[in-house]
Image 1 (cartoon, rainbow, N blue to C red):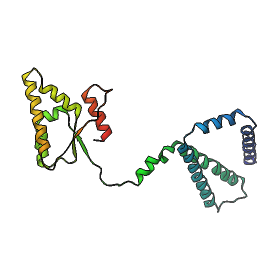
Image 2 (cartoon, rainbow, N blue to C red):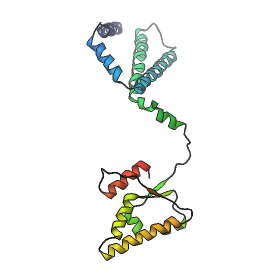
Image 3 (cartoon, helix red, strand yellow):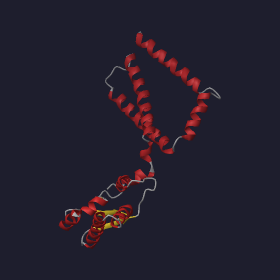
Image 4 (cartoon, helix red, strand yellow):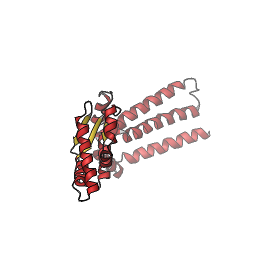
Length: 214
């Protein structure tokens, strides 16, 4: 008896809510239309796909309960509950993950899954230290060595310094760079990428590392 009253109450609420939404010139309808117009196509497509998957799961779960007594009102309520909740969850989750359907991401699934090129970005202190040249000679370091232009500028400033110690360190760094570039089997790339909004060289290196995944 309690289940019967509960099912009837939920049915009345659902019909009342649907009537409110479908009322002519209802603010709810206008709000929904506004949201749909501003929504991304990928979000709408994700919602449709998610709703279809949720509906399929609801049908599958309902079919799996074939052994249950369909005359029992609790079983009827369970079937109705599953049929409403699963598609709703599918729509919500599909809309939230709609960016996965962007063309760039879909195209990425069909790209070559082989090893990507590795970038090793050198900063001023590593170049001046000099041991990077010894590591390159051993062949232990793979990938491409990236020397940013802003690092070269900083190195040149050190080499032109009025302080003799700094000047010697800067010239040593330039000599080490020339040595590395002449090594066979070592891929060296001078990067022109800069970040004008960032002033500190260390922060520029971090931004370049992010962009190159180096």
